[in-house]
Image (cartoon, rainbow over all chains, first blue to last red; front, side, top):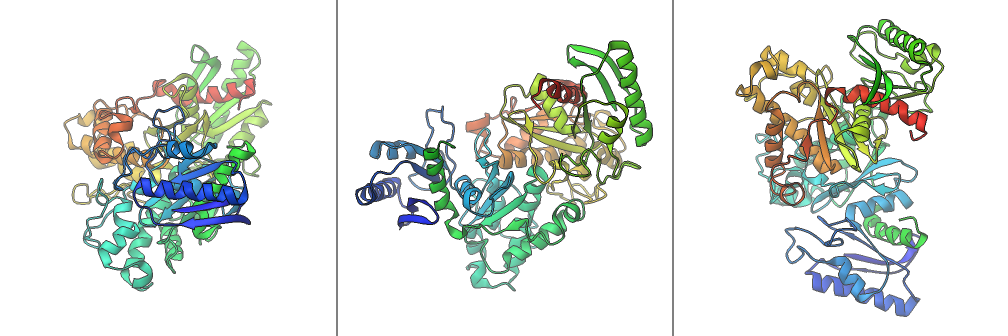
Length: 287
Length: 287
């Protein structure tokens, strides 16, 4: 969990990072940090919370601002927004971590000026948001991009997958947890010549192709610790270009996809800065 | 090709349907019909054209209103909007056939009141649009939903697929053309107990699941001749529910998905009425 106090990437007054433990510990630590920061810097105008999902984002729902059902111990049905509001009487913006990161990238990163882009994080899990004219796409709920199902060739990759719901969905096969469970190491540790690199690139290319066909984004931003492994992004571009083979790539994206599948402009701070951007929008009245 | 003159589904003054031949024949026949209708009914206020794709929808592009690259003989790079404008000096709304059908469903059909739904047609080909607050989602281009890649189990389904670009993408495996090429008959002719039904339902369920994970729509409307085959829609619902197994279905959609995966409210007239809705929006100033 990363907490920031400030008004933008060039004006961070205070920062705190700590591991995500049980909700009581985490939420108390976060709100204590904000209360301490108020003593030091004066009133905080608004709070943005970009949470791991699934979460309830419907403002007219009785469980708005709750984490809903998650395998993370102790976090199911936790009322995050309620906790914050009980502690600090401020406007609270609430969204998924990936929607938040997408908002951050729209305001200050690789998504500036775009009408339609996807932000995907490949870390311990895999999640993504679609940002349309600066606003996250919502429907029945938020996207759950990590659970799409790439083709799983069990001869080439006998690993059954780690998703507790689906086994071999994308998150089950290509998340950081899956990589470590399958190879006993991260992509960086295994190195770019290990076969894990091409396997991972193929799974992520499936995601990029599906996003391209279904959403037609102007960019796909791939964030998260796994996506940052040296060599992975170029491999994902190559495999995506092969997958969409001729039909779309030449005319609309060029062959190389260098400007299409990109790293976050805000690096590994996209999520935290995104929460800041959400709070800032509340203050500016543009949320 | 279907041409309508009117102001809405309850007020169709004239209608003409004919096969899609080469552009000269088709576009002349359509514009002649409109000119004749003007003589009979008075001035036409605006024209909506919902075209098979891929098409250029960027109004600031030099090739706006063109069909771009298509395997349909004679149609690549045809300036549809230019042709219409040269013949009838009217405002012209232009979009893909599936976006048009989605607009029709939003105005008068199964998409009324929804913020986010998908319209998919499964006919000779497979295409789809995402309608957000009544407007089709756009990005680099329009969605090309038909070209996503479901898992293709070659033991169960040795058919290589008919897509000229990808072979066994969704359209290559599950379009009407694919069904006829594989089985020498349509789903209706083969009947609900033929194994084609479950195979088709599985491929379309993959699409419905991917749409659910990526776009989180409130409804998925399945139109087109193939989707109308008796027994298919319930089978797609069952298979989709199995695919998203527990993760999303129970809380958000219910088990049966009866209200989630639905047939078009406008039946097989969604496309033509959609084009009418597009023209109507131009007149009302809400396009």
